[in-house]
Length: 202
Image (cartoon, rainbow, N blue to C red; front, side, top):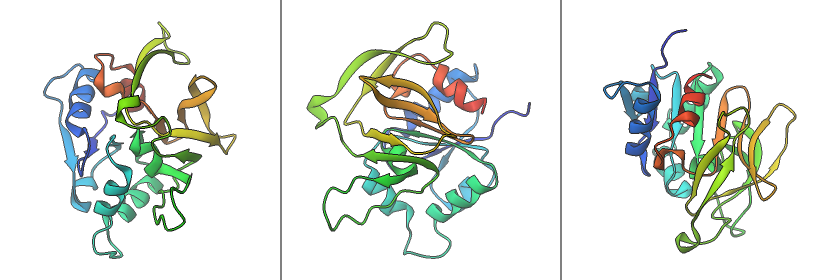
């Protein structure tokens, strides 16, 4: 299998931690990872990571002057051509089809690339962040250290094509379809690179 050409959306958020996690997953501390900030950056990418951060800010930054050729549209185009996407925390919200509105005037819209409904900051403020031992389907050992920071919630999974890989208190926290992996916690903040390795094998 051809090695993945990896990019990390670097508009905002903890993108540097994902670069290190990818390199650990590939067992190569010099493995090339592109920091994606423009349409040109994303052109060769086969696997894109959308990191945690503030989902509204990332969405606004990716819509450059509302042009027809902005980064948001480029991500959708590349996905249609087969690019795999890993959304983490706020990245899950960006990828979802439905987002619980925080106000009637909330203009935020997801990319609609995985058919889930999400709620932003569902667990509360930063002070309400927590860590917990998780169980991941098909992982051996199954235990994974989950770090939740102002995490969103996946309120519902709306398609039979989506596989739920992990839950916490009966809420989906890790799920995938054929080309998108959605994770509401932060695997890049641990030394365990198995989730990144799983994504890179998609």
